[in-house]
Picture 1 (cartoon, one colour):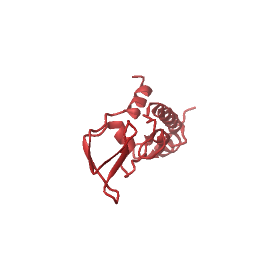
Picture 2 (cartoon, one colour):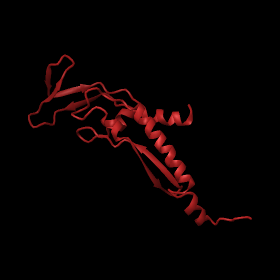
Picture 3 (cartoon, one colour):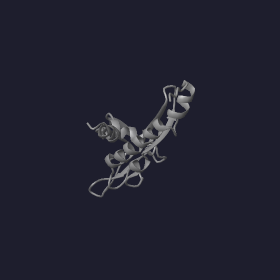
Picture 4 (cartoon, one colour):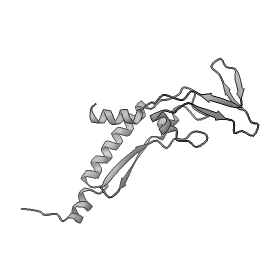
Length: 144
């Protein structure tokens, strides 16, 4: 018996989020998310008052649909204390930049590795190296 699908019916069944293609994409997205969480960097003492594993805990995936079809978006909506995209910064790194105090008293404050508290009004941050946790997870999926 020959079954002919008209395009709207094919789209509805096979390319929906719950159809065979959508379920396969969801399975792959779960796998990439698990792997990205394994590769995500974790600071021992947390970052900017956030607990250790803050970035790792925020990695997630969402299903969507556009004009091409169903897709999965694996991302990390983690943010720095001032609202910058922390997940993106860890993935691609940052250039050297200045950090200025925003506190009402006009001072930056941090505890050094020696345990002493340091103060400054401006810091020249050297930037950060990329820690490609999402790209590594996708490379693992491809078998690279």
